[in-house]
Length: 477
Ligand SMILES: Cc1cc2nc3c(=O)[nH]c(=O)nc-3n(C[C@H](O)[C@H](O)[C@H](O)COP(=O)(O)OP(=O)(O)OC[C@H]3O[C@@H](n4cnc5c(N)ncnc54)[C@H](O)[C@@H]3O)c2cc1C
Image (cartoon, rainbow, N blue to C red; front, side, top):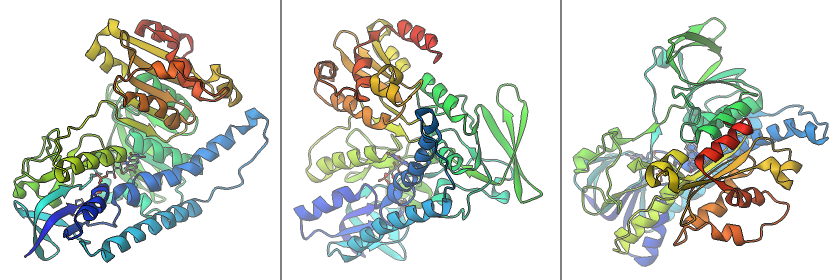
């Protein structure tokens, strides 16, 4: 049986730690195991390919709006095939270079196979049994499929199959089951390329992790290009003549039945753990109620020297969180420090049109945590700044949430062009010692740039009531 200093399962964020460990100990022997293409989901079928796809979709929408700015332009065609081939060739290049690095390293045995615990610190990989003194579980997550009558028989796509080029041609119409960020981004992609898109989500709120007013504005804008049916549950799928598929959905409150006929179905109803392959229970590793790997604040599992990070622990399924947690594991597992994870300012973005970004607490959470009277909310519309007006950026806004006495930033939510970049200034301050908004108020902001949207949101602070009154006044409530 081969014995390793370290076994790594998952070649995504875990690779952040492998390189520095080899530099520290040139004799180290590491097994890196991944059942899929190397590089992890973000590269192979997640963030990176999906963003290569949605960027041209964003350009389509910008061009659609150019007429209002005095540009008479017409899109002759958009090639699904070219966009997908470009995506594939860009990610294939990276995957190949990672594969080469893994295969050529003297310190690494790279297994392109499934790993399964057979006993504590012992795993079965392909037909071998291997042992490890330390194990990193960075196994990611996988598509969760809802139980819908007829789904398997009739056929469907997921983000995995779309990105892996399982859909050869742009469908004339597509139903997206799910209303979270993957559903929204891929719905935006297909609609911008010319498919008739219908989003069918179970949750009453589209993009349920966003502030309600951000979600409402996203719905208002995105409904111009696709149908969005929330609070609907798809109960059954049937095939109908002409190789079409019929989805039968029920409105969850009224029970009224809706039928949607489409060429293709994309399921994007969430992600779950991959433990049926890993069998953590055989390794003595505890899991949460939902089946994610249980970790403590140091990202240790219930077994000493076994750590789980990234999607595998089910806390925040974002690549930047996986990267951050890999650093924490490096400190704790390798440098033997005791560093706790800190999730006070987890940012995210939704790369739809409009783009959405958020960090930290939402209004309701802030009020619950700090009390209503200790909260201030700042608000600024893009169109009330010079650059926003120049861009004709109607309705979009930034909302910031602060603690009244300390001026500590608690959260921020922005919907509109470049929101994922605009929010970074706020995120950075949330990582200072006092999280104070003061530097934004004091620093010169370039005029006229969109950064003024953020600065002015911080200089127009009000009570939650005042904020909701203004929202109503602008038709955004
Ligand atoms: C469509 C889509 C879009 C996304 N967009 C974004 C985005 O814009 N921004 C963002 O921050 N995040 C995004 N994400 C999420 C992001 O991809 C994940 O958070 C990130 O990949 C998690 O990294 P990780 O290191 O935890 O594991 P991963 O990189 O997911 O790697 C896990 C690897 O382990 C392998 N594996 C699992 N179990 C076993 C086993 N038992 N044996 C062998 N191998 C195993 C898996 O096959 C996989 O290759 C997106 C995800 C999807 C699906």
